[in-house]
Length: 282
Image (cartoon, rainbow, N blue to C red; front, top):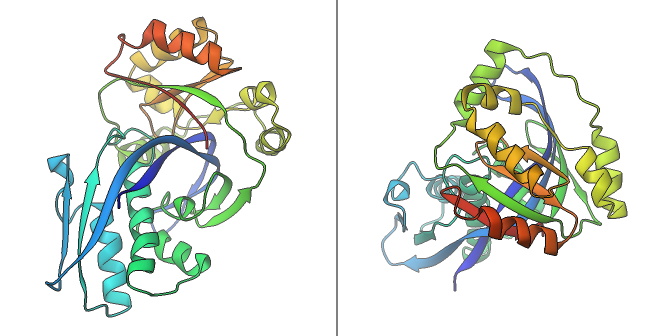
């Protein structure tokens, strides 16, 4: 039975110093959205891991779902084989955490299939060995994420925010974005406040959420890809309360006051870019 593997957006992302491990300390508010891949996991007789996907690039050992399965298999000396099939809907290298979500979904479902009975805390620890966004996807909805992505405080009262996502069709490597950030060391001034954002989510105050959107990567990616600013302006022209690059980009999301405004904007700009998606937060 296929299970959804949800994408995410970053409503807030502040990048701290680079650690000796190569990771950066971050402070972020991440929120799952309804856009998702679909993952099927089934046992096989052979003692090996097979990963297939609708996207041929993702079939094989580089896939984070494969790495998640291999990590569990080695650590807990699992002698069973498994076949994982990823139906890909989330664009690659888009700042939406598609691969990280696939890895977390694989961990969660193999935990059940193989009867490992791992608690959330143990799964988060394993997830952090795969990538900094993976631990967030072990839980659900929205969270304040700190450290190297491994300190996760769930925001319990999250609610549906109407979103239009636009991906311009090119990819941005997270590794490149962090390297560019370290090299350029941009001086970033913002009035956005992460604590005000968390309170606004809990109070379901959409205007205050929109006022506190922030992403340290945004000046880096907009400097290289001028089209991103055009996309932001297009969303704002079409009644978005605010618009922001998600993660390391290049996907931009617009936050709307209601489904009506979001739908209207979607219909006006759906053919302007390779990937335009009307969705909402979970």
